[in-house]
Image 1 (tube, helix red, strand yellow):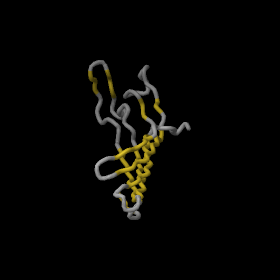
Image 2: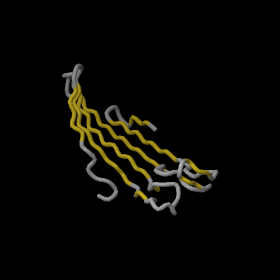
Image 3: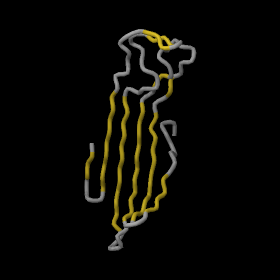
Image 4: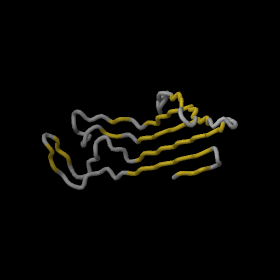
Length: 121
């Protein structure tokens, strides 16, 4: 969902739902799976949010942009079955990034943060 809340502020929201259970049993190589097992590393729910604020810099043709984006992923299992000896439950997390960018007609410069915190802080 995109929303232009003002001429300078935009908001993008996203959501994804995945029914991540298998309907059949079987084997691929040495990996055995059963009906009802969840797909490994596939989260049931994912969310995204992007917030951008754009500020024109006078009549110079330059624009300053501040952005914040976040992504959430549900917890996932590392293999098909909880009984697999290599199975691990990977925690759900939020990941956040920020950006400050200046744009002109023929160039742009920006500073983007590396992910600084997640659900664990």
